[in-house]
Image (cartoon, rainbow, N blue to C red):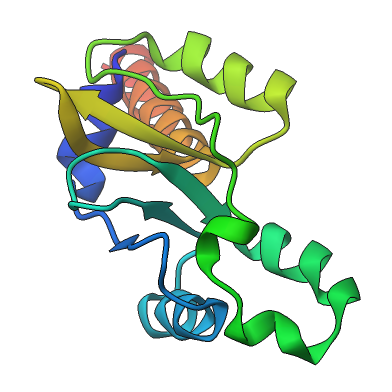
Length: 141
């Protein structure tokens, strides 16, 4: 299975934010879309960074002034990415080993989608359920 199989099921929508937007706007985006991470992009196509709920929580030790700071001050700038043709199991292992939950997908030199570890797990569970049903049908026929 490939990452494009996950994207085909879940969709390719990606929420992005500019690096100079403040963290209060980021928190609003996360809540509004019910997501755990936002790709930081100056132009909506490049990947300048990624910022997650975890990043916000960790930065809260800086106090309430955090919300007025730019997203770039807490984002991860060295972002791991994958392509639509990457193997699902390899990507899942990369995410697990790297201890991150979201991975931007790059195609044709630009941001194409984002996948979460939850998306990958759901896809795998659905796949196993389909295989199980096929085996049961085969055995019962």
